[in-house]
Amino acid sequence: MTRIVAAIPGRVRIRDGGLRQPDRLQRLHGVLAKLPGVASIRGNPANGSVVVHYDAAQVAPERMEKLLERAVDAELALPRDKHAIARRLRINRAAKIGMLTSLGASLALAAAGNKRWHAATGLVFVACLGVHLATHRRQLLR
Image (tube, rainbow, N blue to C red; front, side, top):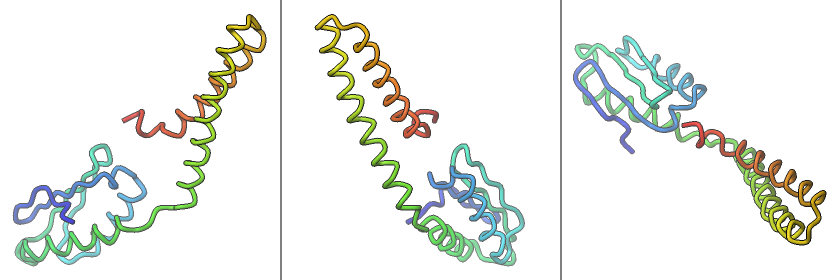
């Protein structure tokens, strides 16, 4: 899969959403630095891009693009921690079920006039909402 968005002899820009993670960007920097002819690498995690400057006299632009593409594919294809993802999904599912249950109970208790339990179930709803928002904090703060 091509991630090269701009290339001129001596300079290549690579963009991928996975490069927004500083640890992956740092690992990729180490891999790219070992390629022949690479003079400098500048990463920008805010927009998920890397600019590689290289000596076009030492390495042909087509060859450098192929080397970069292979290196980026190999680095970004590393599996993420599947157990952490599964755990986060289970926690989020429980939070959503808790929100639905506590909202229904809170509304029923409000209709029945029981203020104390209505407030208590409202607090449970807010706590579950906090867990749900914490789970999705990366998407919310983009």
